[in-house]
Image (cartoon, rainbow, N blue to C red; front, side, top):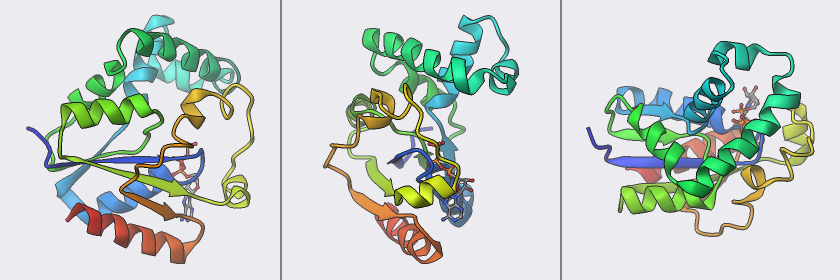
Length: 183
Ligand SMILES: Nc1ncnc2c1ncn2[C@@H]1O[C@H](COP(=O)(O)OP(=O)(O)OP(=O)(O)O)[C@@H](O)[C@H]1O
């Protein structure tokens, strides 16, 4: 079934995209479902490498080796078809009214959603201070933090909303503002 609204969440690593997506889903109950573009990327990359997904994600080398290689591989796939992973991720939906994508990382992703679901897209950029992100476990990593997948939307200025997620108070305010956007 077609969704009524698709919420696209973006933000730097450890800004709290997944955390906020879960809080929103708790508030929206069975009206919403969380989807991730990274899911088909990981599962396809695992099959490309002949690994099962669990092996890929539990591998000790995953962070150091696979993650960077997966970014390069997925960029090659995107060059041929910019909507490839967006399309696959949408096909995983079970049919709730609101789809929450918690990992939007590229302008091409936003364009794809706007083209394929006109009038249904709301975009939100989640902001968190660097010291807060570090406290949540963020460590600057060459090949991850300085490449397109992490930086492409830094200069995007067409958000429906930009919200802060630094502490309890800003989180609460942000959740309320996002819910208002969905009504
Ligand atoms: N407002 C908050 N209060 C307490 N903990 C938080 C808050 N926001 C995020 N966190 C915690 O910070 C960590 C990072 O959050 P999360 O995984 O949601 O970030 P992310 O933006 O999805 O990161 P990545 O891009 O690396 O996947 C998690 O352990 C999460 O529980």
